[in-house]
Image (cartoon, rainbow, N blue to C red; front, side):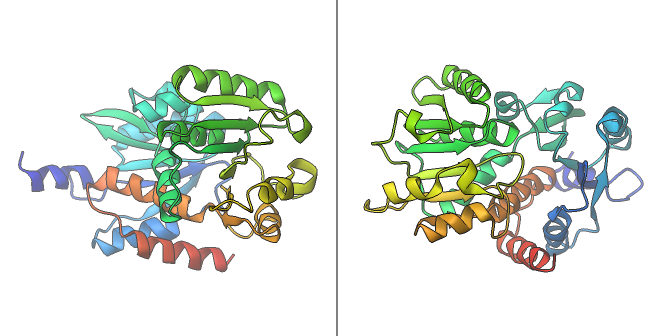
Length: 301
């Protein structure tokens, strides 16, 4: 099969209709993904429409069977399906296996495969801020699926130290132990929320990532943002506070008030989506156009 024929087979069904593509979650109405993914398809003059489907956890097996039977182009997964879907897939990438979560499904030689583009999206968002985790001391708030991807990304990029802070210390400790076994050259460990119990107070963080499953609406009560931000103020590079939630969050507002550098999750969302698009189509994603579309959609909410 020639390359154009292979590309055509990937994108279209035998009858010439475009293969289905979209995102599932529960709930899913809030998703911005269609706003920027459809811009990418339009840019390449492809007739596909990226859709969003609300799929309850109990309906996930049947939906994934539909994905197989209809030969979807691809699928994105968001909460609560990223981990639950793994047992229904034929192949896992190293990133999906290493984090125990997949956010992108695609077909590889007839088999349904799972990948985690959150890792590449996270790293690309940091690169856009000229931040390199190599040999840096970092902190991750949360111990769920998003935190797993962030810890995996930072450790893979050569971070020197990753402190995992969580309301439930045991979950942070468990994740720290698991990731420390996978990345023995990186000092990864769980830490209590109480700064008095931190073993690293004299070693300021250069990056703090909020990867909790729910937005932090009262940061002062959950995490001492000001203290962490001030500890890094006199260094050459200010501490970056990165909230995986997009928009102006209370977490970022407090960090800005403490004169820290801030970054919300919109760029990561778009960049992980760009990697998904490229995986499905084999075409370069128009990142700037996708970012512009995402910002427009967010401002309209």
